[in-house]
Length: 340
Image 1: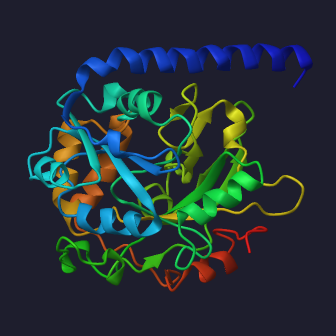
Image 2 (image 1 turned 90 degrees about the vertical axis):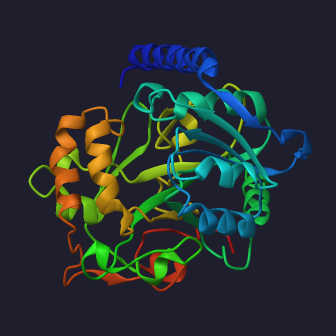
């Protein structure tokens, strides 16, 4: 890319980031404060941001996992839940909660709401931005909690940390494995696709565009370029001028997307174990197909929802059973890098 083109691109991206921040400021009026416990947050506390809807079943395990990792405050937006999610969250001593009934899709899939809250509360903190069906793991996560990881990242001058979203699924029809709140979802969601990933580097935002996994194999076999992107940057040392450009997949400034090594080595990275394919997805897919709130090009995903409504068996002979983070490292799906 010529020097003049690079200057022009940098200018456009700078203004895009400013527009995203201004957009989030405008969308703050859509939020209603339910309970605000941010006064108890210490300067070095790790924060977690999420938008949720009807996740009362997933949340007990989700909260317990991230508490064990070292998250000290959860900043959550509830998008018009009807299953008791709001009451469950409001009762938690480490949750600050806002609610809204406005459109998830028109809020950039919740990112406008979270960006406003990050501008207001996240500056200077290491922050996780995840969905309720995403469980972060990383090398040594079972013995070294997040404060150890972010301390190491700080010492090495890194402000962001990348992760592959890894779709987990059971062996058998999805409805055959009932899930109760608080259960370990990976007792049944213990299979994944290990080797069908395609990676390209996006020239504008410098992020890795990763596609593959069971969704690419099963739902988008005939149109792989429409399969969801699996690379995310969920952990960031936040500054009020930062903004996610596309869910938690890409950030501005774009230097934060550089969570990989171009010189033949490996940078430390993790995985987001994705619990989307619990038995509840069969019923939820019918609702989401009607709501049309989860994808910008919703018509392209009608067949995806319809396939989920048929209660599929996603397992195949090449499926791999999950054992540990060390297994994912050996498969090249996460890396220790020089995190020892």
